[in-house]
Image (tube, rainbow, N blue to C red; front, top):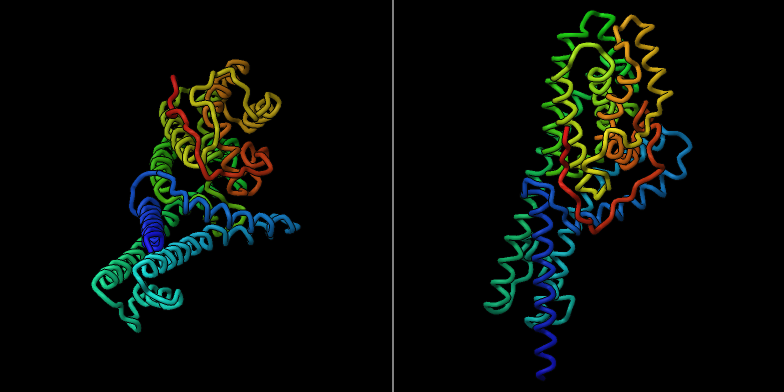
Length: 369
């Protein structure tokens, strides 16, 4: 008899623990305004990602892969909501059983009736009644969190995509920092026009950092157009700013401020997904852009009538010194989201990057310059 009591007590404690873990996952995912990883949510997204990667592996073209991956973020999010409900129902089933609900099917029916506030089965005794009330409150709370979460998510997505779509006019499709400078030069916007762009995109990067760490599912929400992507847009703007700061003769302090805002934003998103990078690289550290690629862009800008610095060697060193701050996180995030091919970002990304369930400790993203 004593062992039976102990066993029921253990079942009740385990059920209560799972309920608290589920509630904690929901709070960290939806309510907490900072990028703290919820392991249950991460496990759901990783499991769903495996299934989508298997499906993508058989797609013959990028357009087909993009079509498949477009459902990854929304479906994972809806699956997470379902998992919250299922784990809550099963945990309360265990607790009702521990309090004496027999048989197990009756405990499960009582749990479902309480969770969804159906009321077709009534609990016996005060302990079960209190437990039923708590499950009903938790079920309504989870539903309210989901209802309030989705509008916030899609508002942030819409604001992000407005800038991504605008960049096609300014930097081509796929976007390129070199093409952006060339286009601005051809219409006489190379001075004030670029400075206005740096200011607007600095705000975009700051908002990106806040939304994509508070709502990490946004990282996987794809643009309406297959050739668009938030990460390739970020790479094009950062490369444009790095070229303006290094290759154009005039000093561009607004571009340098944008570069700092941009690489800090990408690093903090990378921190959430445990993407390794050097938080304090040397300006001479290697980057994925080769000297030959830079020289080709330098010659292209000069041929288009853009005034460039006479000291090509120093211009290359300055460009590499800026690019090294965001090079690793840019190409790894491009691999993570399966981004469309774009110059100097997803065209050289790793074939895949798999986020882990348990994050290692990362250093604070600081930089001397």
